[in-house]
Length: 639
Image 1: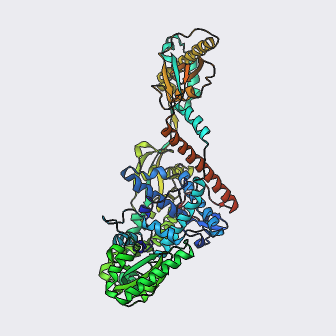
Image 2 (image 1 turned 45 degrees about the vertical axis):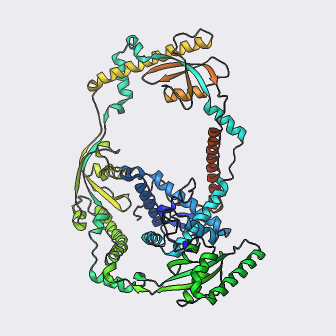
């Protein structure tokens, strides 16, 4: 079992396969006790802040998750909305209030549960079912977290899921209620349709010039050519910042010398053990019996140290290592539970330990190999260090350039050339910009709604001054300068008269069709015989059989206590339809498998509502304050 208990670092993608994430997605998980104050605060939970930087980071992490899930279909523009940003913040608040509740009640998960979760991580076992230590270490190292950080984070994840799970798994829908709802879903209705098409009434429509002019006057916006601009724009993004960061060999050498411990491979030990299980929840008698058995085996080991492997195969109760003579392979400090680790790192090679007690039971340990610590040479880690330095310098450089970008655009507002020259940026040109994003421009930065809002101000369009510098995505800033402005204009009446004629005729024909349909509906409800209807068809919530979705929904909602039942619906620009419900059928044979599946779905929906209600209660309990607006960019440059 201890073979599986290794360094605990973040395996984000693998963990997504393990945990049942609540209906709200926890974002930016951090220990509640680590939250620190900052003047740049967007929200507070129990008096502790959520900072702008934490919010920005959570958005970037969420965007990256979507990018990995969706691949080439990912379009970041669809997440560039106030709703997405505030959704991320709300998720962070949900996580924080749960963390506050957990911290206040000293809740946690046991070491055993944590270790079991690590052992169950998929994709990290060899073909024969053994835990692959080296593969695990490589995956952990790629995440760049220390064992302590990962263990704390994973423990908190699991604790939060226990809290949410307690609510979800207690959700209950009575069988009678589930059955009634299921019957509603399975119900079928025999329906006939009588259609009054607008096209059939076109011949009866009389249209005058006054009607056309009145339509033109009432719908002038329909015939308006929106205001448009031609503009120049400049972009400050990650590539522009990275091009200004230079790292020399001297910088790399200095960083290497100052962080030598970081690039050292720690001492590793190879050990074998014999485990006699004695868990904390077992009786005192069982523990005493296990200890007696372990002492007897220890005596045998001391008599014949060379027979350790055979004794382990015969007696060890660790299924992961017993077959290999108790061999646990190489491990470093921080990889095993502390009592085991302390004993292993205090033994000399070939020594046999006394009994070592952990939460798993009693261990007899022998060290079979020692791999001394060693430093990785500079040549091996040079590229890694260069990347680390650039990452550290990037944030500072971006902040500096963003400030220069913002100030220069504002202070030298007659042109974008000064800011382009100062920061080495390219001036781009675009035409056909309107107040709303255009499909023709696609994902162009100039088509971003934030930029368009900044560009379509009177100061920018009329006075030809630079727009405000705005951040349209994390670490992407843009500013524009209008070079040509065309105000909105209404097309002349004569130019659109033919189109208006068709619209008015269709409106009038639709009105006549509805009048005829409503008159016939009144007669049918009064007892007139049904004639002219289409052949009957059976409609359910799952099967429309060619009916429009809105008609299908109306049919299933209609009052059918008295049959036949009639109701009518208008279809804009198409006409009117009368529907006759002649029969209602509820299946007599209950599909128990389907009913159970539907009951589970109802319970999940109910649980999500209860969980959301619980989170709202915690928000009030822990005094949540939101200090930003839904329309405020998450990465805005605060002034």
